[in-house]
Image (cartoon, rainbow, N blue to C red; front, side):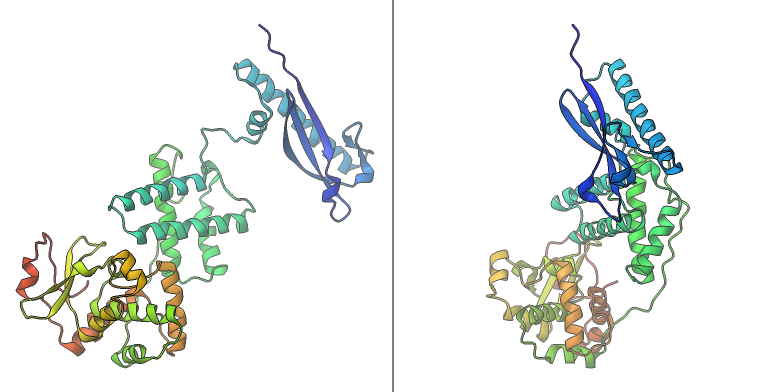
Length: 387
């Protein structure tokens, strides 16, 4: 049985996209009444375009070059059509277009690889095997990659096999010069990118890792912390904007307990217990190390907890603190630093180092928690001092 099959190619000028006296050419492929458009990547003057002959008028070098280019495209499309028919494929306009452009199903792109990795991290996070901060890291890196592709290559995606060894160096340069990021932040984005490309190799999507020869270079820095004078200024500052006041209180709580963002975010009333010293303590299995930390609740963090006991967010979610998303929280901290005239970057890492030095020394916080902390039914314990 012979199946009826119609196939035609039309080259036409997009006059409505006229710019600087020229308009782009487009290739319209029609198969059995179905159409698909393919950009010809050539611009011509409408006055020099012969719509009936579907070619540029005249014998100028420009006309010869453009007409030869159009004939090459037509020939390639006819070749792909013949090949698909020979393979017994049902030819469609969209399939023919994809074959010409090289958009085969067995080819994977950089964005596809990131999407797969981010989705897998999301699934692991939901099952309790990854922290929300890990998902944030790869999501932010994915955003930087998409911005870089548009800036560097003027495309929204890139086939994995088209990634050259210069890619990682170009991405590094972009992060430094266009995003204006610090060295260690740049290295973290590059590390996440290398991890995704390594996965692509292991999945068989990429023959070799084009970034394998690139070595990350982190700069060692002294841990940043707040002195007690600045910490007190932060605690005592009157802040009238509710969202900033809440973020300030959550940050101060981290400074007085040493808990990281993801750990403080997960705290609920069940994490508070009374130690053998008769004082209230707080315990939490750290996401990063899977170990339990027990920390004495000093007056200031205890006051903060009581302040938000009936807060709508805390009541609805069973939380001790009204901590919002990590990205929003970091943005608020920048505003708070400006309001309080603090010339240091307020981050959750700064909070942990402030606890490990300033707070523990000022308040004589013990290195080891009381014996009661060892008997609260935990399998993994550690000292109160954060590492």
